[in-house]
Every structure is written in C-alpha cells, then in structure tokens.
Image (cartoon, rainbow, N blue to C red; front, side, top):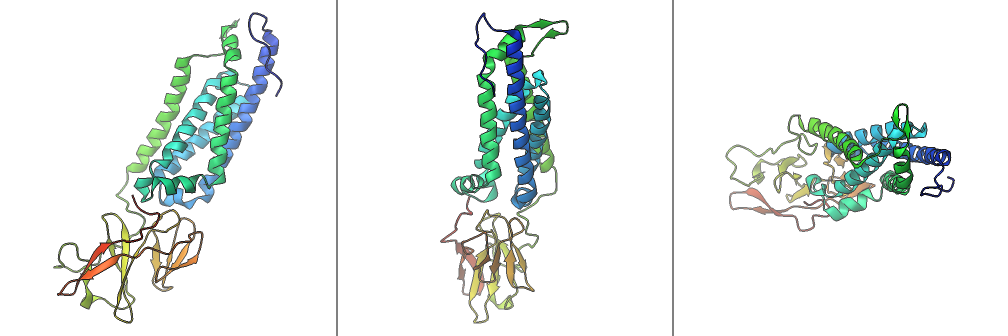
Length: 312
C-alpha cells in the first residue's frame, strides 16, 4: 500500500482519492479473508452446532457481513468504509464476548478461552479484524477530507459518528435476531436423549436401587442439575458412575451400548465403558461420580472429586 498523502490544506484531492481507494481494497481483502476463516470454522467445528447453536448462527451473520462489506470495499465503494469498521468492531466484541459464555456450556472461562485461542481460524479472524480497525483509524483524517468534498450527488464520502453507530447497530441487531431465533425451539439439554431411568418410588436424589440394576445396562441421571452422567453395575458387583461430558470441549457424549463406548459428536473423541480415552482429541479420562448406597440399596451421587474442565 502506498504511503498516505500529507494532510492539511495542501491535500491533493486526486492523491487522497487514490490512496483511499487502495486502502479500501486492502480492507476488502482482509474482510474477505476473515469471512473465509469464519466459513472454515463453521464447516469444521462440530461444537458450534452441537453445543452452541446461537454462536453458530451469529457467526453466519458475521461471515455474511464480512463478505458483503469486503466485496464492496474491494470494488472501492467508498461508503463501505464505516460499515467495514463497524463489522470489525462487532466481530472483535463477539469473539471476545464468546469466552465469557463458557459457564453456559459447562466449562470454565479459562478452559474455553484456551480452546478458542487454540483454533487458528478464530485467531486469524481476530487478527484480521484488529488490522481492519487499525487501517480504518489510520485513514480517519483522509476520510474526513473526502467527506468534505462536494459533488453533484452530494458529499464524496458519508462519514459521521452517527453513521458508524448506525452500521454497528444494524449488524448487532442482525446477530441478536438470529440468536433469538435459535432460542425459539423445544428445550434441548446437552444432546443426550436418554433420561433418568430411576424407578417410581425411588427416594428424592437417588438414582436407582442397586437390586434393580443389570450388569452393563446404563442408567442415566443428572448430577448436579443439568449435568449428564451414567451409572453402570460392574460384573464384580461394584458400581461405576461417569460424567458424560467430553473432556475436550464438554460436548455431551453418546453411549453406544453395542460397542460399549462413548462417542463425542463434536470432535470425534471416544472413551471406553470405564471412561478411559480411546481416541482424541480429548486427553483426559471421564470424571467419576462418587456414590453412596443406603441401607435399603438406594444409590445416591455424592460428588465429583476431579471434575476436569467441564464445570460451570
């Protein structure tokens, strides 16, 4: 990119226009790159669709805005200048804001941040949006100059704080609208369709009665509220209760009884029936739930001593 023309009264209209057009081409390329990285993320990260549908739909809006505004900037449509800055600001806010939604998905903020910043498309999008914002701020003086120039159709460039806030508000409303749409659905737990299988008459808080269990047959229960777990009676008569949240990004696992293994629909991790990792990307075994059996044989969960990353 050529050096910005000198400012002040000596500004040359043609040189400013040429420089500004080139800057917009650069911004356009960056925004298209950002949209492409977002598209890749949508197609490759299963946790977006299985764990955080509102994030997936929000990312779709960000991608469409980036690609649309990027194309306008690429063809030097000058009034795409403010929307391009608004798109960058919105993207940065949404990406950093995503980190603090971790408790909604059974994760600590630290673990979720580590996961997100470990995704190269996420890092690329953030870096590109910051670069767009930096270029836009660097061009502010020249944008103001172009905004003062008159033509038969009005000013050469629409530039105002109100215009920026308007673009930001429109893009933000689009993201908010699709996020609202994602919440208008039947209640969805964590992806586990099985429910607690305790029998009628079981005391409050109990999972089941030990005498009613069958070796190898899973009994599903929530503990604490909202967290999916499974209970097994072992061949030796002992009990084993495991968390059903994958230790990679806390997606809900699916137990395939025919294979005696847990599978993660988000990234393909596999655990055996004792909770040990068989296939990554997860590298931690499933946490065990401690149990208490009362005098009548009823089984109660009492804690999760090593919950791993999946905790709100």
